[in-house]
Length: 190
Image 1 (cartoon, rainbow, N blue to C red):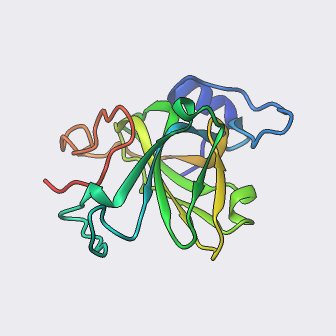
Image 2 (spheres, rainbow, N blue to C red):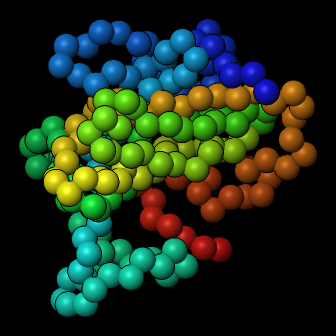
């Protein structure tokens, strides 16, 4: 299962808007790289808080996720270029880019070293063949201090793995619950 290079990513993967890698002053890098694509985080975030508004302590339940544990932040509306993630907490965010993954490609996400060296971990499950949409990312602040994340800048790298054979059943075939999501999507169970 070979990994795609920059020219193959440009030719085979639907990415809108597509950016070339370039040196950008005082900016965490983004765009196509030798063997991946560095995605940008958008301006919308949902930041986890350990208490429910109105009282109570949070219990995170993936089957019954309570969005009262999340505080909505849109850096564009607040006139800032960053968000603060509390200590030992996390935020959900969306990519600026929208993806259209071919049937013979699997995408794996890894965090960027700039954030990893600050104790911030990016997590996303693989993008399956024929998955489409904006990607919801999770950023964990593993430190005991507040951490800053910059909107509209690089946050993670996607690696595109080309299969030797086309899968029998794709994400689109399964009518996956996160197909065609337009942005920041909370967990759900069908």
